[in-house]
Length: 155
Image 1 (cartoon, rainbow, N blue to C red):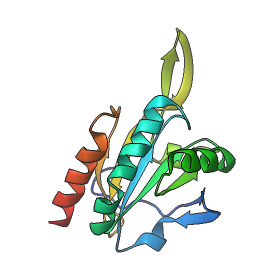
Image 2 (cartoon, one colour):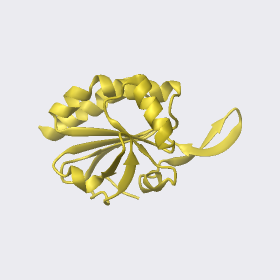
Image 3 (cartoon, rainbow, N blue to C red):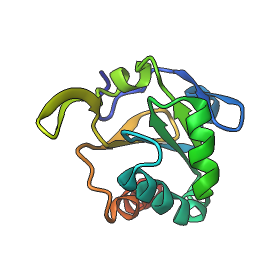
């Protein structure tokens, strides 16, 4: 598991737009990795729309955004297209990234216990160092809070 102010190990993941994303390829850029439970659910849709609405501001701050869930690339492509997300989504069906960032947690729905993704966001700086993490994220105003943190990081 990674911790604040430590280098994030290099990783590769399949992404939308027929891409393979490798962390080290983004050296010199800040990276936002936001983990969400499931494509096309209300909270996950709102979160993606919020990051999309601020996309240009993140880009001006040399920052790339990736959404991550266990959903398939096919599901991600539909989700991204339906809501016009301006960034790529990473597919993590084997939970490699989820485990690296320790976001798989016990959850409960209608009294039933299951293991799922705890909504979490991570900010990695231009040198590949984890600078900030948000866990148990509440969607409302979250993208704005992340943008504020990127501004401070770039100052």
